[in-house]
Length: 294
Image (cartoon, rainbow, N blue to C red; front, top):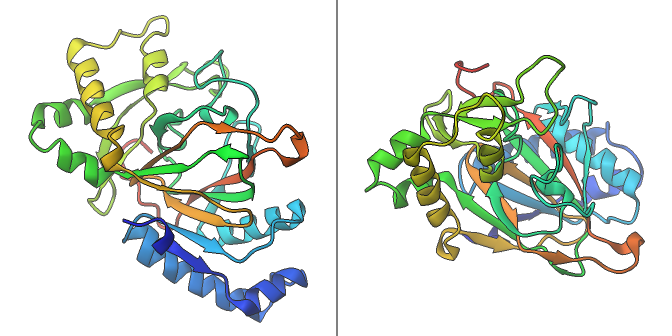
């Protein structure tokens, strides 16, 4: 799996329509059909992701418009928190993953911690998530992507481990639960989609925090051993494909098939030139989620 081979350029007619602010005309409609086909071939099947190139990231408002247009092309744009955030700015807010009650991976500059988006949520999870790169980091910030099928293959001689990962764990909600709701959500790390494909939801730190919540059972030795085995293959450099997004590139990822993370990055000292990406979560129609848990 090669990151560069997943790059596809927007059509010139669509880029011209973007510059003219015409996202509801014929060129945009033709591009909708092309994008849906690309996603079906490369994200639903194929590598599990694609990167669209050719957009200029000089105007942030225009970037947001194109991102929403592309996201709505693929399904329903989901709120990313109880406040109703549809486009989240991914940038360094000076925190660490799992810090305090609500800090998330997207708020930090640290690497590692490969995960899926919405790990703190109950089902339904995002089927897809997108990233539009407005400004890359000054240094670092390479994307790391690992398909769940690769991990299952590496763990095929550990059926006991896979069986534990298919049982429920407590994931911390990161403070986004409604008043009166539990601070954790119970769900398996590994599960099957409605079309009988292997899927994953994961962020180890949220599980560790979840099982440390008052009234929640601590991780058993079997659970901790299974998570350690999963992390060992997940963090193996041979399991991952790496790539760096450039300004203006828009990536679509299969959030149920691909775990992702990044390398640690350093920001430009000028805040106006610091790393910035926009993110959306999308539930496709029909959703790939299993009926159970919805």
